[in-house]
Length: 228
Image 1 (cartoon, helix red, strand yellow):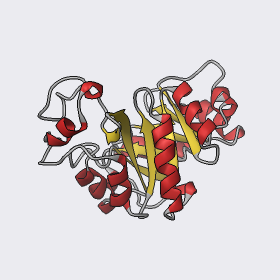
Image 2: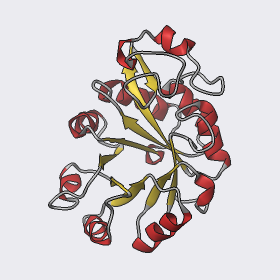
Image 3: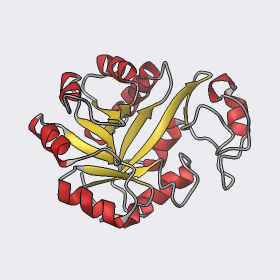
C-alpha cells in the first residue's frame, strides 16, 4: 500500500513546507503530496485560498506578490516554498503527487514537469491530482504521459466510471465515503484507489483489508514504509 505524506508530514511539521516534506521522507513515506497554486508568475506550494490559518500574513493568496508571500512565516520559521524547491528537496528519493489548486495551474505545472523530466525525473514518480477536473483534463491535454488522479469527496452514481472516462491512473476519495464496492469497481476499471486522509491505525488496517492501493496520511510512521 502506497504511503503518501499529506502536505508532507503535517502531523509533525508545518504543512506544505520543505521541513514537512523532509519529515515525511524521514518517516518512511514513499510519496509526498503537496498543493500548488499559480501566483504572480510562480508556482507556490500552499493549500488555502487565504493566508491566515498557517502563515503570519493576511489576505487572499492569489492577490499577493511573490515577494510578500516569501516574506511570511509559514510555521516554525519556514517560508512558503515553490514547487521547484520541493522537487529539489525530494531529490528523487520519493514520488511526488502535485495537487492543482485554483485556476490556471495546469500549464505552468506541465511546463515545470517537462523541465524536471529533462533533468532525469522518472515520469512514473509523478502524479497530478485535483478536485478541479476541467483543470486536471487541461493538464492531461498538455502532458498526456503523466498520470492523473481526480479527487472526489463522495461516491458518484456510476462509481469510478468518470475517472475511467478521464483516462486517469487513479481515483482519490475521502475516507468518510470509501467502501469496498467502490474499490472493486475502480479495480475492474484498472484504476488505483488512494484514500485521504488516513491517520488512525484502525483506519489504516481497514484500508489494507479493503484493498486500497494507497493512503494519504499526516503520520507516515503509522503505515509500513514502502509502496511503489
